[in-house]
Amino acid sequence: MKQATSKSIRTSDAPKADTAYDLWADAERSARYHAERAGFFDAIHRTLNFIVFVTASSAAVSVATQWLSTPAYNAVFMLLPAVIAAIEAAFGISTKARLHDSLRQRLFALAGRIDRFEDSSHRIQEWHNELYAALADEPPTVYYALNAACYNAVAQVIGAPGVRYKKIPPWKLALRNIWPFHHADFPRMDRPSGS
Image: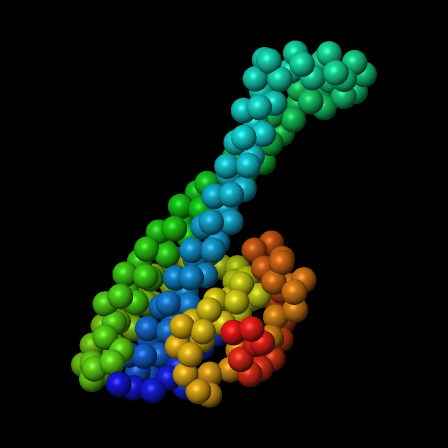
């Protein structure tokens, strides 16, 4: 069995896998990244739909007009469904969720096919090409704090000596799906406490 090292999991946008283990780690990290992005967009989509359905229902509007007798509140409450539906349509949130979910499925399937424990050097190029084909369908913006968090998750799965984690400030971790943090530096550290 090949021993994992700190080079076995990479954080660059494009994979540079030299071994099946490196390739598996790249596919696994990317799949986790897209799983989280899909979940994030699904949550936004469901929340916005819930708000639209509740505020657009005639019962909610009639109750609100009794509670909020000020015309300004009534106008805001009645416009809210249209504004939220326009935001949902303009940003294509459900479409983004489906794209990330499709990439998640492709990358987890690839990670499952990679035999990282046996000599499979003859298949490296095939798997490498498949990984590049999946990554070619990625949206152009990379969320670096999320990528670092997925790197840490794969590092925890590997659990080998010498694997170092990315140090992510809590506030960047909280905003990992909202802000891309271009040019952010996530220094390496030993295993985090509590792991």
